Length: 252
Image 1 (cartoon, rainbow, N blue to C red):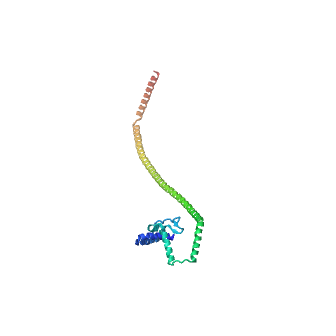
Image 2: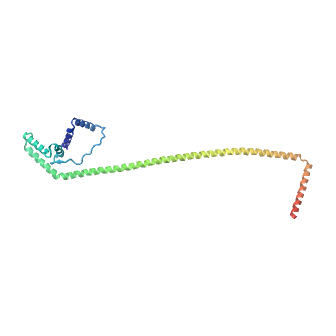
Image 3: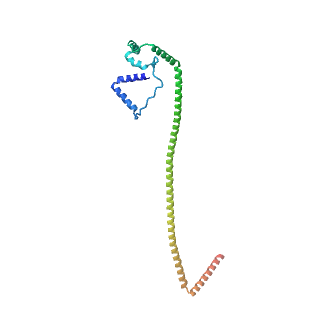
């Protein structure tokens, strides 16, 4: 993995020159800064392709435009012969031990690699399942919280309507009280006016009765005993004549 990373970085910086070094320094400052909010790319679940068990595919892709298909093989063979011819690397008993150990490691990887990989994948799947379960529980709780929040917002809207209805009721009560008080004032004023009218009517009636009594007393006082006797006799005569006329009409 480290060799692959070095090769990819070298390939990118080879074409960029000094600008690439500046970009590397800028990227390091951005990644170490606390103000970097860029999304971090997800790590690959599986490694890249390799050849012959240890050689990354990126080496062959890097050398392919320059040397073709056989370039990496010739480069490896040439480096090996150069190191042997210049005695940079000397073949001794350690080489045999290293080859034996490498063979054992390759055999173990080929023999037990798939089962170990399956076990590791199972552990990874269990971890992912647990994380997904936690995520689902959190999502369900958050969804329920969102629904509750929407319900509370709906209740708040209904509360505003309720307050508006209460304001309307209070305004109606105030209007009713105003009209009742206005009606009470009107009745009180009418009652007092009726009292004044009745008082004036009483004064007029008492004055009229007093005037009638005064006139009657004056008339009675002006009549002499002789005139009273004559008027009584005249009344008796008129009553007798009226009785005879009534009796004659009845017999006829």
